[in-house]
Each structure stands twice: as structure tokens, then as C-alpha cells.
Length: 312
Image (cartoon, rainbow, N blue to C red; front, top):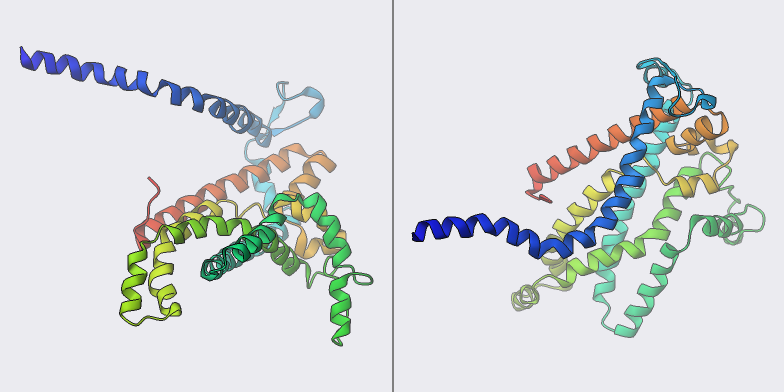
């Protein structure tokens, strides 16, 4: 009799748990609906990459199917390899230097003992994150102007020659990397500062008793304590390596720097929206998505294999 009662209770538990969790599922529902509408529903349009798409017939019209023709054509397209190379160089530069600078700055901020100064510095470096690239592009065009920009005036004041940062292939990629890091590193330090504050203070007290100086405490306590968050941020950012920040580059590049500044997103824009070749642009977009998925999977496996870190 007692065993039957326990069985009945066990059968009721899933329903009870569902009833208790219902408010949380309802809170999650709007986000899931938006995710489905804007992220999953558009995947139907991927079929364009396998068709000789004619816009006049529409997405649901009778289009001619061409199989993998557009994917085979990608490798022959003259600008694709160049755009892929530029995308990887710019994105990897932003990823590596962005994480490094954010970590160093968060450590330096943590060492400031004056709370008012600390808050002031944090506010100043956070502000660029909240400005769109449309606004910042206008500011940067003025600041980096070869004739009237303050940067080139400083260079000339020290005896150097003015540089056309946004119109010279030698400087464009470096300019994109530096300006993106300047915009985002302050906001990224929030995560690393949170990681630092979660480290057990008794570890620092023990290190001081053992005679460790501040640099030794940072190397042996702070950085190891930040490692899980560093790995998480790396995993979250590695999937966006194929993007290279379209907003930034589209607002700052020009035909004179296509050689080093044209990335996959700007190429897709010109092919799809300017030249109206929707099938080829969709095929490049699918290629980007597949490579991003592969990068995320590889980075997750590497983090688990070599650092013992896992998200789930």
C-alpha cells in the first residue's frame, strides 16, 4: 500500500513541477516567439541558394532549381577569396586584442582604490559602446582626416607624415581593429570585473602572508580565477569571427580600400542588394553560417579538452 502511494506521488511530480514552472515558461514565451520569427522562419529563404532566383516570381513562385551551382561558383567568384581573407584578418585581430586589452584594463581598474576615480574612469570608457557606428563613423572621419584631423595634426607636430587611415590599404585594417576595440573594450570589462570580484578574498590574504607582491597576486590568483570567464567570452565571440562588424566597415570603407577592407558582409550586400544576385548572396550567407557553426563547435571542444571547461 505504501509502495503504491509512492508510485502515485512520483507520477504526479512532473505535472506538479510543470505547474510550478508555468510562470517562468510564460515569461520565456515572448522571447522564443521573437527568436522563431526573426531567426528560424527566415531560414526558409535559404532555398534561394539552390535556385536560379528571379525576383519577379517571388519567394513562393516556380523557380528553376540548380542544385549546388552557386556554391561551386563561390570559389570562382573573383572577390570572394579576398573578402574571406579580409574578414578573418580583421575579426581575429579584433578578437585577440579585444580580449587581451579588456582583461588588462579590468585588472588595472580593480587596482584603483579611490572609488570615485574608479567610477569616473569606468563611465568614460563605457560610453562609446552606446553610440552607433553611424554616429561614430562621422566622428572618426573628422578625427582621422589627412588634412584637418587631429590625429594627423599630432603626427605632423612630431615630424611625421600625414596618413590616410580610411583611404589607404596599408592602414585600413589596423584602423578597423583599433577603433572597434576602443568602442567595445570598456563595456567588455564589466564581465571581467565581475569575475575578479567573485574570487575568494582569503586567497589574496594568504598570498600577502606568504610575501607575494601585487604582480604575483595577479599572475597566480587573479588570472586563474578569471580563466573560466575568459574561456566563456572566447567561446561566445569565436562564432562571430565571420562577421567582422558590417556596421563599422560599411560606414567607413570606400572602393579605394576594397583590397583590404571588403569583407564577406559587404560583399553580400553589393551582390544581393546592389547587383540583385540574390542566389549567390544567399549561398555566401549559408557558407558563413556553416563555418561559424564549425568554429563554435571546435572552440567548445577545445575548451573542454584542454581547459576542462564546459557550458552545459
